[in-house]
Length: 96
Image (cartoon, rainbow, N blue to C red; front, side):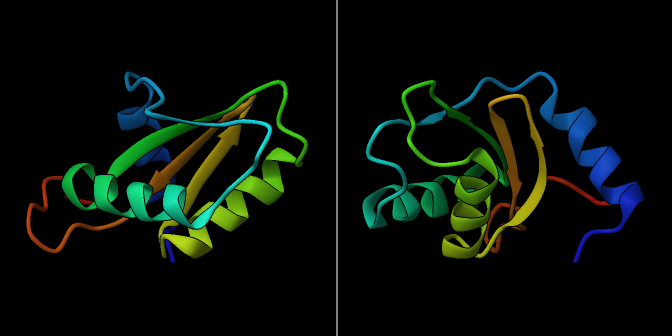
């Protein structure tokens, strides 16, 4: 579980990132969760954007993604979800 200080730190790191994944009309599926899991292993911190045509609530989407990829939900801001997962191989982000 992340502390408030760690979440603030990760939010500042994520500020400059562009969303890599988009959740659209179909919502979240297994394939997307696997891809997000792979990308989190190499990058640790990513943004996912929820498109206007997504039929699901963005908070539900965020929860589903974080549970599926076993990642920490850093924040949901607007239609953007920020996820963090510590990398086993290429750890770059040192949490405060």
